[in-house]
Image (cartoon, rainbow, N blue to C red; front, side, top):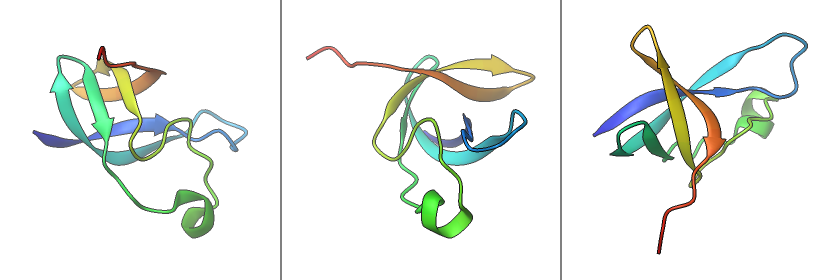
Length: 73
């Protein structure tokens, strides 16, 4: 399933989140598939980027990336 998750923008003074496209791997684990160039196009330095696998927490039905997840080989 492809959905949107929220990733923290690091170069902001306040806590700001950017929605990005991600693929559900398993419960609360997503692989970011959004290939947009956030640095050059939006001047946003995201905590997690394309191809990162992240663990998310769910708040009010929305998923927020909070740490990198390493898939077992």
